[in-house]
Amino acid sequence: MLAFLHIQPGLTETIYRSMDPHGQTLYSDTHTPAAKPLQLSKQPAREKYRVSKVIDGDTIVLENKKRVRLLGVNAPEIENRFRPGEPGGLEAKKWLQGKLQGRSVYLEYDRQKTDHYKRMLAHLYLPDGEHINLSLVEKGLATVSLIPPNLLHANILIKTQQRAETKKLGIWSEKRYRPQPLTRLTEKPFGWQRYQIRVRELKRNRRFSRLIIGNNIDITIANQDLPLFPPLETYLNKPLEVRGWVSRRKNQFSIRIQHPSALILY
Image (cartoon, rainbow, N blue to C red):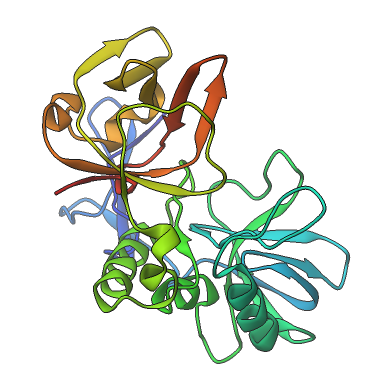
């Protein structure tokens, strides 16, 4: 029988294995006299591929025809027959083309290797070590978009975005992406949004917690994601910014968020 103590990724290269008096195997990052060290690799395994096409600022196609969605980031949409483009979309795509088109790239996976569209999910690295997902955020070409359980590199992505915002790089200088006041909606807005809000009350059911903003708008958080957040009462009656996409059901609007980086206390 195995038991695992919490080990924070990236903070240690060694874990220790020991056995308790009941014969249960324990793993920990804390050394004890009876524990034996197990060496961890300094970085996750990476697979090398050649890029054949860049679809947009956060999606590529490999030489084997597999599509890859870059983890932890979201670039503005580019125009196609189904939707209009967003400011910064072409800039992100052109930058990614310049970096990756026809070149070899290393894929680093997180907890989930594919999404429901059967796209591969990965962090991308050039042979010289450049972390492409991070570079997109650093230059203001993409925003941070964290979806559990894929939270690899979350802290550095968030800190890098904060610096890009402060410097007003890329999309952070665009009027389209400035936060707007929100108390009520009559039409569903297109694309990624930033809103200034105050949470009036909390409502919960078995699957979701809802932060009520106005008569027809709320923020929805799946209860399974709540361990990532501070107590939701923290957000009550305080100036906040929420970032994400608005969904609509009849005359009710909701912004689904999955990580606290999308809900910012002023």
